[in-house]
Length: 396
Image (cartoon, rainbow, N blue to C red; front, side, top):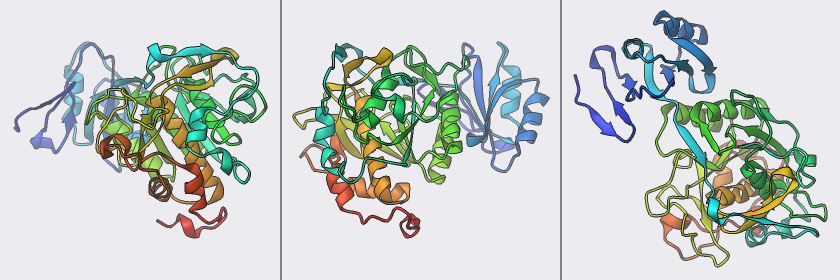
């Protein structure tokens, strides 16, 4: 048997007798485990395998070729399942959280409309005379969205709740704030978003405390695929890798979805969180109004671009407005920029990222803090020819 390899929160045990199975450290306090199967195993067969070990399935996660299973206090059945030749990994259903800095949040009152400084900083207003994101579907995996907010409601097309309670109400406020930066209406009140005419598809996958599990995110991604969403904003982070989440991200990317995520609020270097850390995802760091990296913004080689994320005014729950800070606030600037690019020309996620990065403005910051630089929507959209219905640009 191979030696144990210890990493944070998990213990990978390679079982040579039955192939390369991965069994993450059994946390007896964790009630649920994600069981991932080898490629090619049908849903029915995976169900048969799990039930043959006396383990209860809570729900299927087809996007990750996995199941979320309920585990009792005894470990013998799950250890036996890990030895099954059809199983590739077993891991905890990790918990992550939205990437906002709470003590920097401040309620604000809005009467007449303003264009937030971040929206102006990335060069969005000059684009609006030609492109406002019409027809582009944007998914927001978050705490939900205030469905009755006067600055949001006309752009929200369909909603979903993947928590056990099936709640779709934004009882936190974070998701509503993210939605406003993406698509607050140009209606003479409050604020206006980067892409004020996109179609919003919010999924509540994070609770009132801004926390959610891997299985919830995978469910949310699956719903976004079903709704033919073209861009997904993920203003949240997990500290550790999840093989199930990685599978789901790869599949969503394969389905031609542009994936954008907050880099994280840990500051320092080599601190980018998941899913931003995956190569299929556009990892967004946060800048301040002085074109410097925000002190809280995570850094690392995975950072692709930087966008405004400090003191961002936007919509909030219960019809309100709030100024908030975090890479959570930077990510939706980029998500909306991607939507404006797609509104001008159909292209693959890889091409969208290429356009975004090749037209970004170098702020003179370290690469691990700014990536290619500050996103600039004007330059990005000007660099591509309008070919909304052309299939040529989709071949990458």
